Length: 326
Image (cartoon, rainbow, N blue to C red):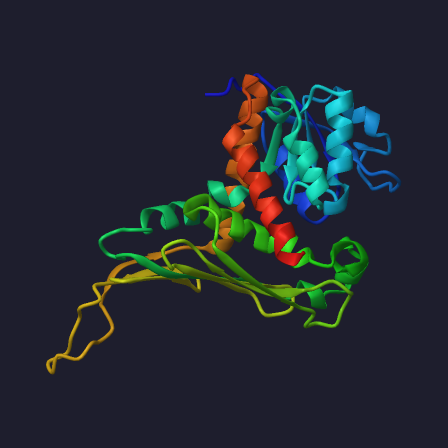
């Protein structure tokens, strides 16, 4: 258990959108004190704002929640000029060359870096783990994940870095799909085949706002991941096995089993519901983010090295994302 008297001095790079969630987590954690909010040029109505990156070098930990293409620059500067722990949002970097630079870092630097693939800390991760080969599910055949909302139709979207295709053409893949892909690879290993189908459906901005990814893993199991900033809110997961079906939809989880369920004439009918419970995907996401952040803070306060498997898997997922879009 963390000593409640220990407090980590935190700096953050970024001040809006996802960075706001992380600022809120800092402010709500009694073991954290957010000292600095860094932006290279802007001023906001917060006395903690600074335009000097060097102010962050004295912090115990720094959060990088800036545009994806800036991540390596900040990582490099923080590693060279400070001894702080680093919490970096996904994707780690945006080029194979930068991945290779991270891979070549000495372990003493790697051990200070945590990439925030927070779905690893979610209940949905546990559900996948527990139903990969359960008796109720049988052998897993298909996983379908749909996660979307209408961000691309909001006015502020056009003013954000996400909509700029010149620097972030594949922003939906690198910001949203990467979470789901990492989670599946975390449990099932490297895929054999991948098909990536991106599109710009809203016609707002110049980056892709929608994509579908089809994946096949060893043994024949397939996955479909759909993400969009251009549809109504959708949060659904379906797992289909040889003996059952698990469905999370409209904040409700149901498991149907067994396969061999027949009517009076011996014809197959839908299996009965053997488990039913509430499951809020958005709440699970928020909890996973908090769990991930709390894990990071505990490492900072206890001066523990980061899990090297997490570091290596993060770079493997990052490399896969870059290979998908070429």
